[in-house]
Structure formats: C-alpha cells, structure tokens
Amino acid sequence: MKNLLLALLVLFCKTPLSAGEWDTDPNLWGIGVVTAGDSANVLSENTPLMLPFSVDFPIYASPNGPVIGTLQTPGEKNYPSGRSFFRHADSNARTLFDLRDGREIAYDAAGLIYYEEKDGFLRVLHHTLQKPAWIKISNLHEYHLKPVLWMDFILQYGPSLFHPHDSIGLNLRKSPSTSGEKITSIKGDLYMVKFTGKREGLWAEVEVTLYDIHPCEGDAQEQNKWSGWIKLMDDKGFPNIWFYTGGC
Image (cartoon, rainbow, N blue to C red):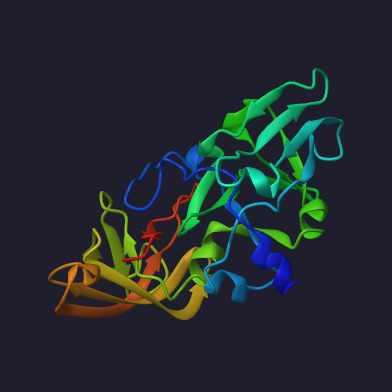
C-alpha cells in the first residue's frame, strides 16, 4: 500500500481554478473528488493524488450500461508532460482530458471530480465528453482510490488554513441552522477557520480567528476570535470555504 501511494503522481496539469481563484458554478466542482488511499490519514498526509501510471479505466454510458471507451493515463516515462485522455471505443480516437474535470487539492496534486453517484458508479468527464460518462467505483478500489464528498474532504483536511470564499459573506451562528443566532459574518482570507470536530448535516462547529494580515505574509496578529457554527457547503454542493493548495 505504501509503495503504491509513493508511486501515485499527478498525470494532468494543474487545473486553471487553483487556490485563490473561485467559480461558484457547481459544474466546475461536482459533488466530490477521487483521491488516493483507504483512510482519512492519506488526506492529512497531503497525498490525495490522481491516477496510477499506465491504467485503463472502462467508462460506461450509464451505471451498468455499455462501455463507451476508457480513461487512460500515460506511462511513467511520459511524466510530467503526459496528460490523461479518453479513448473512444467506437473509433479508437483520443480526447484529451479537460482540466475542468479535475481540481487541484494539494500542492501539484489534482483529483478527478465526480458529479453524481449511483448504483456503485460515479458520473465523471462532464466537460471532457459533454455526454453521460460513468466510472465504476470497484475499479477504483483495485488501485486504492476512493470517492470523497467535498464536505468530507474539507473536514478530513482540517489542519490546513481554511478561509471563506472571498466574495461571499459567511455567517457564523450559535447553532447549526440558518435560524440560529448570528454571531458575526466572515469574508475573505484574513479569517482562518479551524474545525472542532463536531458536525451536523452541512454544518460544522469551528473556531474563527481574524488576523490583521494573512498568516502566510509574516508576523500576523490576532484581531478577534469566535466560536460557532458555519454552513460548509451550499445546497448545490459548492464549498463555502477553501484553502491554499500550494501552502504559504
């Protein structure tokens, strides 16, 4: 297992929507991401990477439907210029992986976005193929890959410096409900969010610290601190908070 994880490398370029660049279109985020490993420990070790080298994953027209082609990754010798592609079953033609179907989730590491889960399959390649395309979860498990909902991904990646979306004011409340008493509103990356471990639905209990400058910029001083609940995801599955995937 350990050797396999060491062998996993990113097989497509960084997505254009990396840290600090936001788009609230759910089609650009899906509902989760395919990552490496069988436990949350892998996420906390900053190794949630893409796909192993030289693998062909069958892609289906629907869950348990006909195979329409394969998602293929280049061999190790092609890294880092190699890029994953879809090979069409009917013509053997190649379609390069559209970078919008991936998301940078760690430094120089990207994951395959999925948009729906049904009957043991994930809907993927929304932009690459522009038609229904599904990958079988059990095929991913063979290579120690697994789907993780964005909500779970964020909570498992807790040690990172999370901050609210820079254009959306996020309410901190005394209870996990939109009717809960509002403590304050937070907006932008001067507010650092730390999880306490308590969760209820789309909500999580957090400690929020306001700094005078971003902690990555130097000797940041605390300006204020609060505890309460925030809604981590909007109703369409878009993360209300994120982190700088490249670190400070």
